[in-house]
Length: 73
Image 1 (cartoon, rainbow, N blue to C red):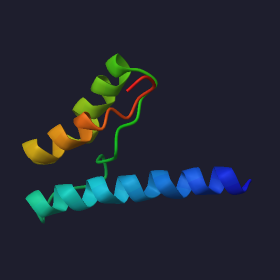
Image 2: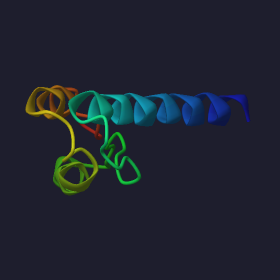
Image 3: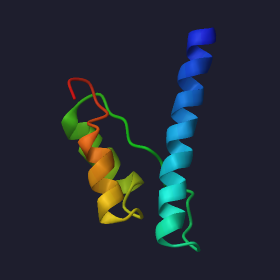
Image 4: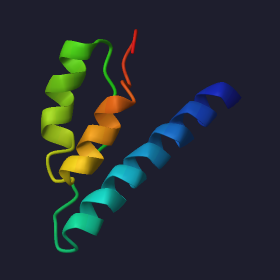
């Protein structure tokens, strides 16, 4: 249970970071559909990222993609 709680807290922190980056770019942006993309593979990650980080700056999107948050990345 503790491990699950740790993972959930980490995921929440990453989502908050993505929202903060979106707000930094545009303080009036609607952040309801902004999240940190994590996928099981590169193809699905790209599909998720296309929707979830589109409101971030190009530099922020490139940084998140460079982390390769998917299995094998």
